[in-house]
Image (cartoon, rainbow, N blue to C red; front, top):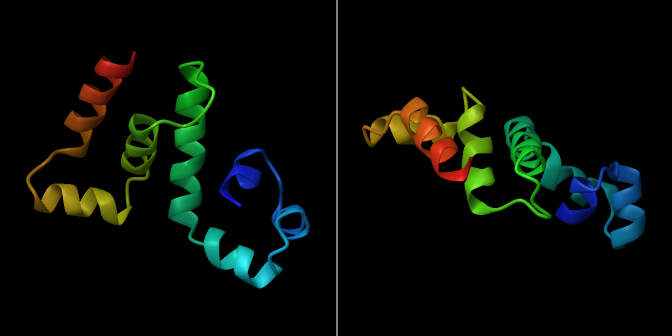
Length: 93
């Protein structure tokens, strides 16, 4: 389902192509912060001319969503999301 969504399919297309009912499809993709982070990850992968989203793009995507739980967890661990973002960008180009 994730591959279909990343290809740009909507809920109807995903349920038709995957054979899963629309309610189940929505359960997977309703989390708006997750959707935002996947969009960010997709943009980052495209920017780096990757064929697929890699772990660095996923992490950058999560960090880009400011109010995401992942950022709160990073701060609780005394990891500055902005510093992590800069380091990842320096490593990935």
